[in-house]
Image 1 (cartoon, helix red, strand yellow):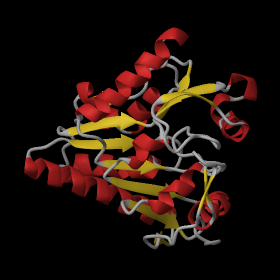
Image 2: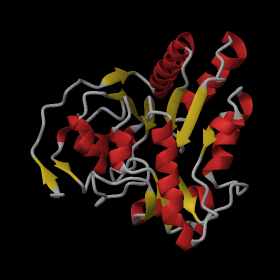
Image 3: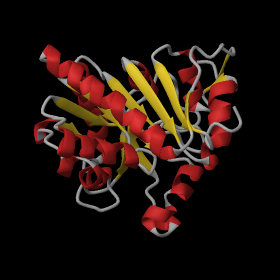
Image 4: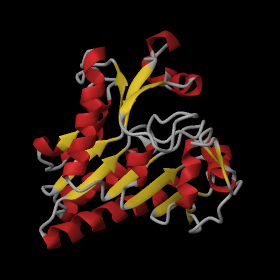
Length: 258
């Protein structure tokens, strides 16, 4: 694919909120409404889920809805975007651990319906593992709603700058900015993995609904670039400009430059 694409007119104005809490509550409501609608239809709700600080308040609200308003997750099938490689699922820096601590342990989702990339495969098994992960997503008819954050370098999932818009689930090399941002979690840079398994950009943009949530001033520059800049593989999130099913959910600090 070419590295650059012509600028598109943004298909939908961002949904703006005064603060991160309100943006997160709105996002959780969109997810809950999908789950309830699918329950009425007797169908699974296939969710693509993200990790990091951005979705934490979303997951907190989903837990509240389950515990105090009776929202059931029995029909939810989840696929997480990514996971460090190599890392054990029991490691407290793993995304399996993160999801259990921030969502799964507090709701009634069926364990068999939880999918987080496992990175205990040997290097020669990774390719097949990634193909199998793609097949599982396809087997459920694709992702109904994909929750995304955005990295300071424009990555979505761990699709770093330079990732093909045709990419599918694969082993990726992590960008230096991504690894620097992970120091807080790992303690020192030399403990941050150099690689990860990530769902690809092509897989992400096949989702029927995409919510990109960005919070805080530190995301304002990349959000402006992703929404208003040229469509380029150097800013992977820029491809979302062309997708009618995308909704940008921003607090005022993240939106201050757009």
